[in-house]
Length: 313
Ligand code: CP
Image (tube, rainbow, N blue to C red; front, side):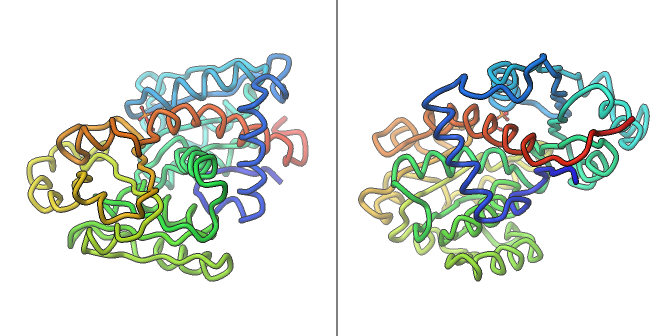
């Protein structure tokens, strides 16, 4: 069976803990493992803008002994020039894994169904699970563990980051509160799935419209841009309803006194987060960005170690 990482709950709680432990090991010893020795190629495809994800996967694959094969999404035009399935059948014969940032989750699922090699979600409209591995690693480093901590996500609770916090946080046994205005709540199917996972890990999940209530006593406070990729034409309309969710020094004052702040970046100071917060002493955003490298190296190493069979002919 080929294992993929298409959404956060593709890893069980124990598997997520294994990947995070490996990430900590690889952070301490960057060249300890070389699963792509050869070098074997890993396809990195981006249909949307990126800095961190492309850079961290490219550096990570190289550090794992492999060749990061950048496939230009604008040239490949996957699904337009040819079907996702046909692209998968071709790439699966050339590379050891496919990392893809794209639009709908169904595109990634189709790639996984036909590639015959591990497929990794580098962000879709629905989820951003690699970011969450880095975020959880960062919190684990700061707090010494994850289970039982309360995390508050502020802003677009219907976004991929909100959905991934619900699933990945629940998997880790955290109490996850996502908070945003009416009309921007999480997908009820994702919320229900996260509640189900939380029921088995001792965590919990909540959609809380009141930002102060969401942040009250939280150990981790997270925000993200209010205008996700593809929603740029909604920027003006979102500005007013989202304003109460801006992560200001005042709002952060309701969190636990030892609370830490995350933001997956890029950030817009003075919009979703105050400069004094992102550049302040509670902020772990640069450590978080750097942890993309270590978390994704651990994920790729773990996926390669959990494959059966030899791939396509
Ligand atoms: N956080 C994140 O995914 O960054 P990029 O969009 O720059 O890859």
